[in-house]
Image (cartoon, rainbow, N blue to C red):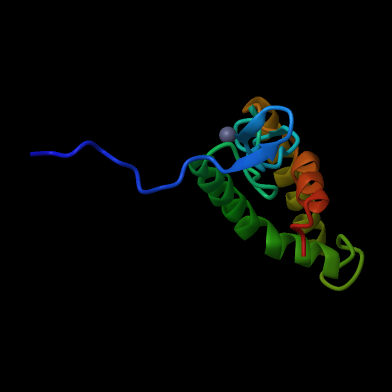
Length: 134
Ligand SMILES: [Zn+2]
């Protein structure tokens, strides 16, 4: 025979209230300011202070795209910088790298806008505000 289900967990913590006897203690859950998901642009309320995305699949999609972009951009941006945009050293390569860097950055900014994603400025600002940039 089955016994009645009895929870072994204690119920809500009780605190004394001189006027009303005992009342449940308020659950201490900090409220974080609403923010926009860098992947879908939707507003959401983070559960923890450093939550950047509305859902983990969006974090994965965003990070994959960022990694692909970074793979293409890093060497170009470094070549552009090291030649001061093609004004020193290998001028031809430096100019091309600078042009290609600007072209890709504009292309990706346009892609983000068309997809309804917040700008890179908003993403970097949020990470900086939360102390996640190192
Ligand atoms: Zn999202």
